Structures are given as C-alpha cells and as structure tokens.
Image (cartoon, rainbow over all chains, first blue to last red; front, top):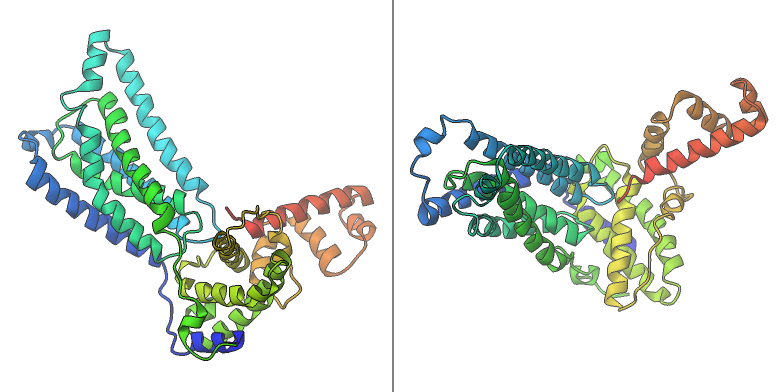
Length: 226
Length: 167
C-alpha cells in the first residue's frame, strides 16, 4: 500500500479526540484500585477493630495523607510517561520529595526514643506482613494500570511500568490503613514505602514486555501490497 | 495538529503528510543498510501517530512528540532486526528544523521563541529571521559583534532545548 493511500484510509471517519484521556483513565484506575483493595481488606484482612476511635485521632490521617501524596506523585509520572517526548523528571522529584519528608519525620521520631523504643517503633506488631500485604493489595491494580497505559504511548516501558506499580501500590497502601493499626512514623516510612516499591518493581518487570507497542502492521489494514 | 484533534480530517491528513515527509529522511539516514524497509517503517510510525494521538499534550511541541514516536519505532525496528545501535538524542534539532513546511504553522517555534528572554529573542529574530548581520543586530542593543555572537549561540542552544524537551 502506498503511504498516501494509508493516510487517506486513516483519516476517513475520524471524530474529535477527547482531551485529557490519560488523566481520565488513570483516575478511573485509581477508583477501581481503591475498590479492589477495599474488597480485599474487608474479605481477607478485616478492618482494624478500633477503627471508630482511630478516625478521631490524627495518625490514621497522617498515614493516609502520606500514601495519597505518593499516589499523586506516581499518577503524575504515569501521565507524563503515557505521552511520548515529555519528561517525567518533575513528577519523580515530587514523589521522591514526599518520601524524603516522611523519612525525615521518622528519623526525628526515632531520635527521641531509647534504643528499645526504636526497635519497637520500627517493628510494630506487623512488620513481617505489612509490605507483603500492601504489595498483594496493589498487584491486581498494577495489572490494570499497565493494561490502561498500554493503550497510550509509553516510550520507556520499564520506567512506565515502575510508575504504574508505584501508583497502584500507593492507592492500595492508603486503603490498607483501614486494616493496619500501626501508628509510628518509622513503621510507615519503612514498611509502607517498601510495599509500594514492591508493587513498583513488579510493574517495572511486567512493563518491560507488557508495554511494548503492538500496533497492527499497515499491511494488515487490507488493500493490495506494493 | 490541534485542528486534527478536534476532528478536522483534512487538517489531520495534511499533518500526517508533513510528518511522513520528515520521517522518511530521518529513517533513511539511519537505515542505510536496508533502504527497502524505510517506507514500511514510515507507514508503521504514521499508524502509531494516528492511533495514539490522544497522548499528544496540547502544550507540547508537536515535533518533539512525533520525534519521540519515530525514535521509538526505529529502536523497535532494530530490536526486531536484532541490531543493537545507539540512537543519539542530539539529532532531534535536525529533525525539528527539517526544511519541510512548518508543522502546525510554526506554532512550536513561536512558543519556543516566546520563552526566550526579550533580548535573546530580538537577536534571534534579527539575525535568523530578518537576516541582519551580527554586527547590525548587536549594535541595536549596544553589543559588540563578538558579544552578539555569544548571545546568539546561547539563545539557539536554549531554543533547541526548549523544542526538544524530550526524555
């Protein structure tokens, strides 16, 4: 098929292209991911028994705020990486800044404790399962986010997959706060962050092949060769 | 590009034609060992550009967006051919300034020019658009010819950075 014939065949029956497609679809992924994580928490992990009192105290909101900000940073990175030819550096700087600020708060908290208290603050009661749980809650959403991003045009599949995973993991971690009773900065800074990064690593590995473009070859559009 | 996104099929058709004209030499220069595949790759890239046009951010230079897709398709082609080769990023400037008619009626360039400080912008316009000599343009702003040369160099560097804005 000749190139100008191809172009003609492409432009027949085309309508207006909606604006802000990546943003809109990623917002839907966040909503869907939150619902999946919520369903898993309700059915599998159960809500924390003292949830009623906890919402009256600040820490559960601090936790949720941290992971929600991580989700925003990763959302921006996903949106940038869905588009060819733009840089995602600013989004990653925002993501890194959120982690750094929270790590700073955790250090500040640990300095004020005696050695035994430090270990207790770091381990809490669930340090062995926290990261794993968050990664499991975020894994289904990571797959959905990758499938959505694949419909856009990521030119850096590994990094884009990482962003998808970080985004999904951060959404899941926010919901995980409904189950997890831990209330120290140190615990959240270490185990929540690791859970989110676990999802991100999963996304990076899967992204490397899931995000490769599989557009039809022009010859598959029909018409005679040559 | 913008009119094409709003559903103007003729504008979109012209855009694809222009991009095809730019992609052809871009690929041809880099695929000297397999010239017969160039046109196939041009077509594949146009198809991707068309089917992924919702990923174009309206504030972004069209050239940088299309270039990133073309570069991706070229690397993808080489991967399929099992060739490993580095694609230098710096030829984005050559791609953007290719002599074909302006994409988007020069919108990219106008925007990039506006992002320069006023003195640099005046210098670029005097020398590169109106064709004045460096000495004439420099005299307007009270610079020596050499100072104007340096300033122009900086302005152009900044301009090409602004236009590529790429990963």
